[in-house]
Amino acid sequence: MDGAALPGFFDSSDGIPLRDYQERNCAELLACIHRNKHPLYHAATGSGKTVTAAHVLKVLAAAGKRCLFIAHRREIIRQTSKTFRSIGLNHELIDPD
Image (tube, rainbow, N blue to C red; front, top):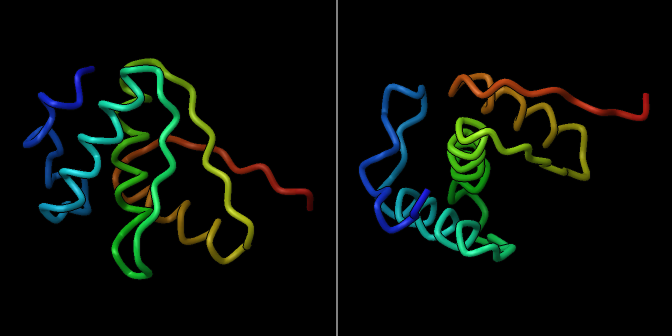
């Protein structure tokens, strides 16, 4: 799972195609994770952080890794779940209600 070998790996048939910078970010995040680092991804509002995270998580899930995505607002959780479904990422929600 070498992130350097991943550009072009993310398929537009996933439902939400990645922009060039998102694909580079995915590869960089996966490279960090491969080196046992724990990256923090931050980007401007509207830059597609959730889509980027969804694609990274899909690659990790395909490699048999378990992942946790945390959000602090129900609206964000709903939007994230919709994004995950749109790229075919199986997931579950944990909610105190």
